Amino acid sequence: MKLLKDAAYTLGLPVLLILLWWIGTLGGSNFYVPTPAQLAQTFVDTWFSPRLWEDILPSLGRLFAGLAAAIVFGVGIGVFIGSFRTVRRVLEPLLEFFRAVPPPVLVPLFMLIFGLNDQMRVFVIAFGSVWPILLNTIEGVRGTDEVMRDTASSYRITRVQRLAYLIVPAAGPKILTGVRQSLSIALILMVISEMFGSSSGLGFLISYFQRSFAIPEMWSGILLLGLIGFALSVVFRLIERRILRWYHGLREVQREG
Amino acid sequence: MTPEPSGAAARPLLVVEHLKKVYPTATGGVEAVRDLHFSVPEGQLVCIVGPSGAGKTTLLKCIAGLLPITSGRIELLGEAITAPPKAMAVVFQEYGRSLFPWMSVEANVELPLKSAGVSKPERRAAAADALHAVGLDDAGGKYPWQLSGGMQQRVAIARALAYKPKVLIMDEPFAAVDAQTRADLEDLIRVIWKQLGVTILFVTHDIDESVYLGERVVVLSNSPTVVQDDVVIDLPAERDQLTTRSHPQFAALRSHIYEQIQRAKHNRGTETASTPTVLRRH
Image 1 (spheres, rainbow over the protein chains, first blue to last red):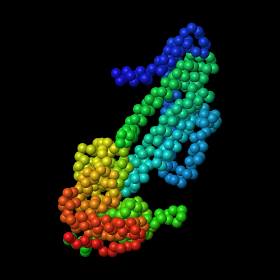
Image 2 (image 1 turned 30 degrees about the vertical axis):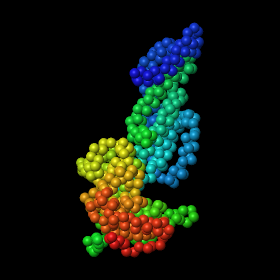
Image 3 (image 1 turned 90 degrees about the vertical axis):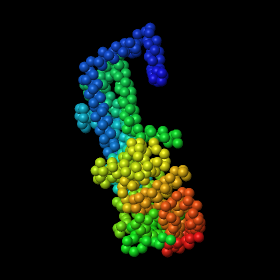
Image 4 (image 1 turned 135 degrees about the vertical axis):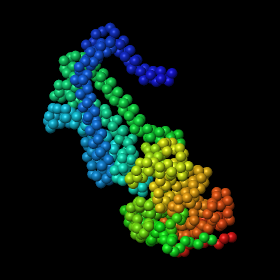
């Protein structure tokens, strides 16, 4: 019963909108707006084909490679910067500046520097999505509880173990907030990096369909991107729930108390 | 009347000599501790009381090697303390901020041992023993925040015990728990102290608690801190929440320390006690 109710809440609005869309496209045949049935058919025809492994999977591969690099560097450098007050104070304004620069404008620049290849695209994704992770990690490390630090010192916890068992877990909630912000940036950059000088990938295909007036195919690509973004955030939520089980439990206890 | 232990056998374990601590500020510095002077022989349970703001926490952090001292000397086992010593464990008042909430109770207790390079089966056993000693045999797999405040402080005590320190420093450990839990924890400290023979430095602002727990109570003055009084607690070793607290000597000691604290509130930085005070039995 509860499951049904949840499903009704989740699917209610999308179903209603599709219904409206269906009614709206009943009579006419607008060149730019396909009917729901047309779009579904096009979606299957376009993407359940060799494009799945020739375009979608490589795109997703670059997305995850870029994200992984952003997480590794963001957390690694963030822990370092966050641990030293002087380093933090010197670097923070600069980092805020880099964060403020919209990453898509750097794509042409990186193309010139690295050439038109996969490494460039991965680099663009990593470079654009590293900032929220980096800045949040610095913030989280800085906010590590004083008493916990004193506890670790008084028990002579070694430097490496202090990182693994105190600093990184304590910054965990902040780090994952940063990763969540990075997900959408990474997806945007995945698409944009493929729109320039590329001959494969989701971003390439969508702009190719646009240029060749394959309107239903273009819409199906946009639909696919939306679904990928949605799936990413669902998977991320599951992972986050798991990693931060202690955090959500603690918060719940504090709210009750 | 128990005389102060003396001679070679009772060489002080912990010595605080002319301790001075000034916090640097823009306007030249705040003197928290002026000239503290006392020593603790091995195996003693000493309580430190003082009016609020007496620099108790500053003193403890200095002793624990967490805070650099301005001048003077703190010595443990004959060696000056400049960093947290191996033979010392600290139990903080804020158990909720001292236990790591992302680790199970067991992992919290084991972490200091893991860092010290103790093998896995050994630290498992040590953690189980320590949790047993504080009466938490079944809590090992839980997260600290799933336990009540009193139980969390027991976990912090277990972590300290598993570390097998020579000196256990406790900074107002029971200030944040309810009265009944507090009485239980006080008795637990007495039992642990007797069973393990560990030296305990117990800081509290509660006069009754200091008399009930201690073999000796050091009264601190208001900040900048000096030793206001040093009182021998000559109550029977076997203590009990009912009989000990209604003992006439308990009342006498309590009112003596109460008076000292009242005087301490107005006394800033002039030492009055040089030898331990021993109250006459009524």
